Length: 246
Ligand code: NAP
Image (tube, rainbow, N blue to C red):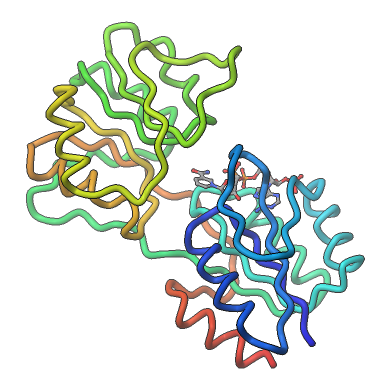
């Protein structure tokens, strides 16, 4: 029996955990940061909360006798990914990063690519009046001082009561989102600019298609660098990697 730790927090990680649980020789533990109130809990064995940095993760891998590590966190969860790569090397256990491919600009897309959420906020006043903000809950404060812009903010959970939030409307919803839904939102709220992280995958891609169709600009936040190590971009390849480890 091998014990697998999946660092989760994405739909891909949930799918992966349920598929990996079907392999008889593998026991799956999923780790969630504990950011969302009602997370989709993928397996019987789930742990919540940070490990306490790289050293804490090393200690956990040893104490819990983890044999295999898969980082299936979001492409923008850079800290935990770098910690995972280093901790796996320290513990000398097989490690894989599951990362879905980034979206690529296609004909008709009007993208302005920026290096960070903060840069996205700094360019908006040049051209935006009504913005659909889809960067999650944690970095809303970067937009809070932009008084000339109205924001439609889509979040899984509402922000904390004391959080700095830009002016506009909060919409609590969880993907996947249908194209018709995204078109309707852009039209109803007269959106001229969409702000998105380049998350990749299908679950949230419809907003990019809707923006293309309606001539809405997209401020696309580029991904942070990933740590060195073996990477795959689909569930099938991850399952094959797991089988190869048995
Ligand atoms: P992060 O900046 O890389 O992580 C910050 C700290 O949170 C980590 O150092 C770690 O704490 C803890 N942490 C993160 N993911 C964890 C996990 N799966 N299990 C246990 N601890 C974890 O990550 P983040 O951007 O805050 O994202 C947090 C979670 O939300 C991740 O699981 C990610 O997959 C999910 N998520 C993030 C985004 C995004 O845009 N960033 C979008 C969708 C989902 P310690 O150092 O104490 O171990």
